[in-house]
Length: 88
Image (tube, rainbow, N blue to C red; front, side, top):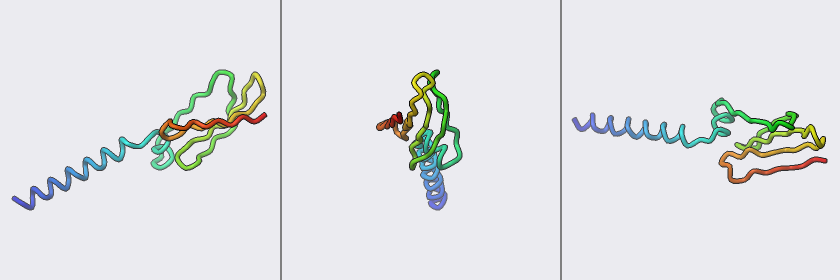
């Protein structure tokens, strides 16, 4: 009986760890590390140029159709820092 309780406790701990690990990842981390899907919506006046990863952060390069300027926007993993670079 004691052996059964140990196995149940171990299985419950493993299940909790798997659930916590899979739900704590951001969209960026899931797409980058586990092959998930990341969706990026462009603004109506933007034209897609390129995209790249910097660790778990996604950098999207677009061209503004109205001004002709290029922008590199960061889509960070946690939404805390959202960098932006303007190229004229």
